[in-house]
Image 1 (cartoon, rainbow over the protein chains, first blue to last red):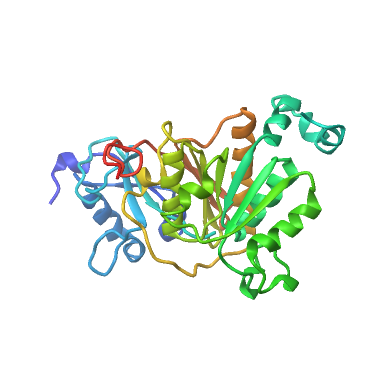
Image 2 (image 1 turned 90 degrees about the vertical axis):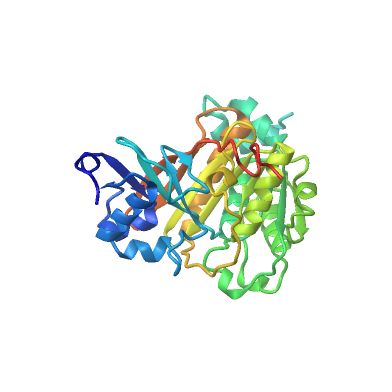
Length: 98
Length: 246
């Protein structure tokens, strides 16, 4: 359960283009949580289809997805990195085709 | 030194104020490696040749197949079965005989990547899989050679320009070792479009003008015709260009 304070936090998730179609074309979605994992869980609870793209069947982030916080890599803590009010999470996927 | 023929051939781009004869001369002195001759590499090498890059090296280990022809615009029906570097080089020679084109029919590996790109002014990413991109990324960092990354999927594409020592490299953004080969959906127009953005970056970088996609990933969404940019920062612990380099 998130505290009242956390519910007021403004964290934005900027979605990779391939994910935007799954959230009605939005590039940026407001999310809630104290960590990147909580924010992703919030996003996935509202848009469950995203989970199929970014996680494997064990719930781990797929190897071609990466989470940035304020443009910085969170590796190897993609699902546990702390976030605070005003942060931006980038959910990135790698386009491998050529 | 530009010849009379060069001045005539490249007249319209020499008119561009930030480019001029000096920019054209810089292109003529440049050596660009195109790593991969699929959808990206074909379109990129075509426009590098048009622009008058002096020396282009074409690297690929595959032969032309029927399923390539929806996007790999330098390979024709008569080329099916032909080595891709040879097929591409033949067309480029007809387009601009003053450009030196080297054909390398070889698989890029961790062992030979640095040797293949050594001496290049920059490398264009024309590859179609995770692992070879990361091999070339590492080789470019080791050799200090700029690397213009492009990647596509369906009607989506991405571009960033990597300058070793100055910008994040691919492994700063995707630290895990990526592997596997996927047969991805792709329209011909997507790699063509992304390759043209890569060559736009190459021309500016080689001639020294304009702003580059350094520290930025530009995304193209052909489904909605939107462009978006994600800012990127160097990862000080990067396994390729940072403290944890191996």
